[in-house]
Amino acid sequence: MGDASLDFETSGEEGPVVVQLHGLTSSRDRDAHLGLDLARALRGHRVLRYDARGHGGSSGTPRPEHYHWSRLAEDLLALLDEVAPGEQVHGIGPSMGAGTLLHAALADLDRFATLCLVVPPTAWSTRPAQRERYLADAALIEAEGVGAFVHQASTAPGPPALADAPATEPTVAEELLPTILRGAAATDLPDPEQVGRIPVPTLVLAWEDDPSHPVSTAVALGELLPVSRVVVAQTPYGLMAWPGLVAEHVAVGAGLRRG
Image: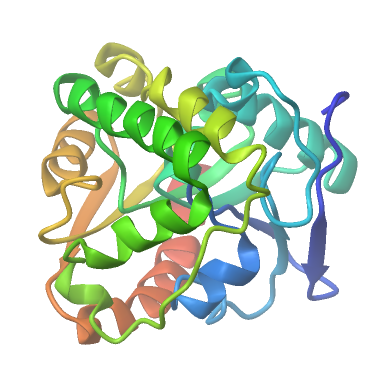
């Protein structure tokens, strides 16, 4: 981590480690409010939850390249070396967290027993349009403040699966937010050929009608990853099933990885 201090917490006293990440502009607490604490149904595991650099309680840096997913993957692996040295772990990550996990898995193919990629973001051919949105958002914040950014986001339709979710705001300091968005604009998932080299059993969870997290990315990942399953939620009831699906995947996938 070096130039950033990561805020993290662990729960559970014994069992395999499950690390849970979060999405862009969010934090572990904000994701919990949104119903995305997907490790909550796990039993017999140690759960590591942390805030990515520049998010929540973690410190940040003023350089966009420090928020590329490959750099966040370095932070993740360094944190695992500190908290769970030498252990194979299970990874859960939505959006930015999904991108971070894929880069981390490629950097260390033996580190993860299972992966759960949640609402994977735009990637490859769909990334350029998202890149322009992030750059426009960064300029808006610098010109009019974070309030204008929050208002703009609140007027955009959300996915049906989040219809019951409470309103939240970014958990990123206003002075860092444009930098983080520009970092996100300049990053992408690993190349498809590289993704196809990841042997880790993977559950891909997606929801419908979200241009920033299109089902097309989830489907593509399901086709590329050698051992994978894709589940798409259409309503809040579908989202409620996710913690149980994650718990099942961690239990079953660990056996597949050992085999």
